Figure 1: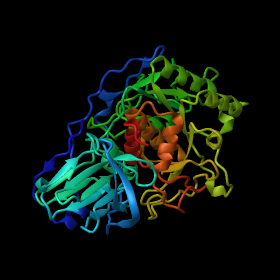
Figure 2 (figure 1 turned 45 degrees about the horizontal axis):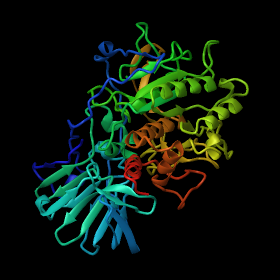
Figure 3 (figure 1 turned 90 degrees about the horizontal axis):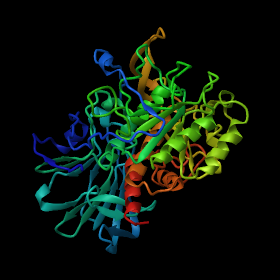
Figure 4 (figure 1 turned 45 degrees about the vertical axis):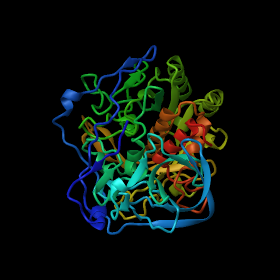
Length: 514
């Protein structure tokens, strides 16, 4: 279990500390990898670690921040707070919500209780932090209740979730989530998790969605199986696939990327790249197994989308696992005749399986409506349709506000939420088309957005496997960061997914709070 600790070092002024480049701390309190049971009929695949180590990395760049954002609001009435031991009381509470960038939070003495939501930090890789400034007091003058140990359950208006708490001797209390660093007069506490993978600092998608905060609670476990229906994996001449992928199972040869387009390899890397191993990038889920199935019918023996999906469902049930399936696809001609009705039957008959599906990339055509099969999210509670948003710049390098919908992301009724696109992912080819395992800093489209949601959904199920697929969908939507018009809209759905808030919500539900 992650245990927050005070770090005594050469102290900086708060402003310098908030804007300076801090070294990313590597924590040792990670869950050790445990060998999981193999699904019946599946074989574990190997990756090319020995060949990998001498190969260079390529990375993306994040723009430096010139200022920090702060958004605050006061709740005029009383809000209900529930502590971990079920004591309920009403107080005058001030709520402060951060942006998707690095935010500096200073807390006054005008409110008995202050509730702070950091809401992700796209600038984390540049060293900026969602920083709670308590630099005028010593850490020894307050007490803590950490959310991953007990915490305080509070409903900020979109469902109860577990918050960290700082308690003052005068009765004041600060509840917070999504905070990277707390600064006291005698040192600082680093709360976010920073694995030692060299590309982690460039993976702005993890930082903007708060995955690095959610890792305090879970990095995934064997109770969850991640299914990927895509183009399969690229293999080299030795029979090995990308070295930064692991925990991968296959159904015979139904994992081979016949198209050689690297799509399935990139999707899996975002969800579940090997992490904290000093190599390459970090996946969202570090410990759950992956079943990757080629459902793009290039060969006669390839499975259809419906049959491939049924195979994943069968494997998960044989091992008593919850299943999240990623489908970064939406071209009917790739799946054969009657694919939509056949696949809809699979979705309808398996309400316990969560399907995360890319919304489509034809938004620039101006036609309203999301692609098939993502359109099933209109009808089924176990289907999530995912749109795409930018980070700090567009695909052409033009500056943009984090969370802005990409121009190509399809929109319309049924769109559930949005997630980052144009992100780092594993690559398998050089410019000449030769197999060369490396990383691509611009895996794009809603195909790259959906895996972010799949990975985060798998973390939610890891902390609370009793949730229904529909409940997971609701949690992800309820805790998303609403950046457009208040409430649901057809362009961004419920907003940008927030991993930290979603996991905290799932924990609160597991403890019996609503």
